[in-house]
Length: 313
Length: 313
Image 1 (cartoon, chains in turn brown, yellow):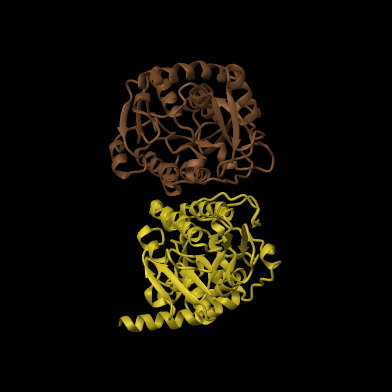
Image 2: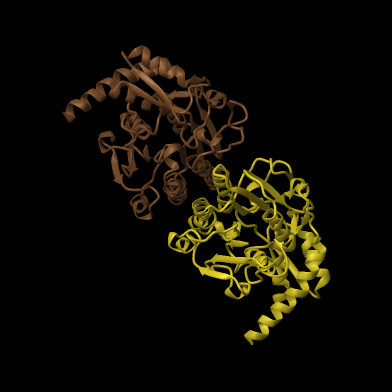
């Protein structure tokens, strides 16, 4: 099969592209390398450097026949979206619109989008289903929700559109240099690098963590499933992990770690966790627990960061 | 007081600006004249020509101290939004973001936005309240909803943000040359100009009409009401008027009118009508019925279009 996976120089896009290439598919990516790294690109990928919302970049795929477009690229931090909301609108909303138009124009019949649990904001009830009314509280979340709404329109043109509302994705390969995205990687990177964790916000916030491999398997499920219309799925473990749990876990695994709490960031959600029955009914089962995932990440993180530090010395 | 009213060369913006000027206020407008007409601008207004989403245009109001920003400008046809969704995103979403940023930067404490009943799409129940879950089905509606979500964020900065979900606004001053916007004016303009009405879509669709003066009074209400946070209000009459009712009304008032039904337009809603209790509880009462409004429009429309035709001869 022939797939477009946007953002393959990043954490999630890279993992998805790698999996598809390993399974013998042809994969093209568009990535502007704004947070992703060229070194992350899996071998054998067809790489187009640029913004996936720019007409001039999209011209390069006008004659491609993709079996599916998997749109993962985009600024992925709620916090950062407050620094430049216009860029966020381009990267997270205009991009989806442009790629949906490409799908429509080229006859691509499947569009998978990594939306986010951010769309729910601080929902009335902590356990959210796909029917919980979204109340986005960051520019990032507003853009993700608008993208979903675009997909609903394009699904009426015969494109199967699937929005996966990813909860907190974590795992090996996460960007340990980006201290504004990814709660697990932010804390862990600080612990390994400096021995001191600065936590922006309170200890009683919580997240629902989902391991990167389980996200890849969710996407893989939809690549193999024909359907129609517009569908939304939570990709979550239905389990609350408190900030204090994460800190405890890291402090138990690594020696001499200290931490402090400072002011929170704008648009930060207090805590929600996701009912994923809709996805589980299709056969998806998350395989990696928070503890198992963190254990893998700590081994990998130490190795990666130590290698980085040695390289810099 | 000193107000910014975007889109004063258009139907609703023009009526609001005229009212404010008549009441002794200072009014500035930004209008790109894409559908509005320079002749519509009320006397005494401070006119800035350009797009209200362009930084270079917005620079001109960077040092203004507005008591309120009333954002009305924007492409206003669901049908047209399918022709150029990117433009729609700029004019209906980026514009709101940019103007909210201006409000925040300049210390403006009130932001009133003319959102639309389009955000509801084809809701499950025909009578919608502000708590009905929006399911936008046009690019226009997606953009309006995203704008509302931006307002929610900016309200946390101390800006009172009011989204008025206008139902079908009609009345004297409506653009009789634009046959893609405004159900009442589209049918009426055709009847007066050619004696034949072409109806895109079925006769059993319906709308909830609200007269332009009642929209102006709703905006005026909020200009005089201090408050905080983000609020949404339906501006509606809570009355279903079927397409067939409109056609009958026009055919009864004008001689020898014929009509035909053709295929509908993309993103067209079948029919919803709005519960406006929330707004009525603040003292708002719509004063002009559909019949009274149409009667005024027919007199005005004949005069206006005949004058236009004579001018062209």
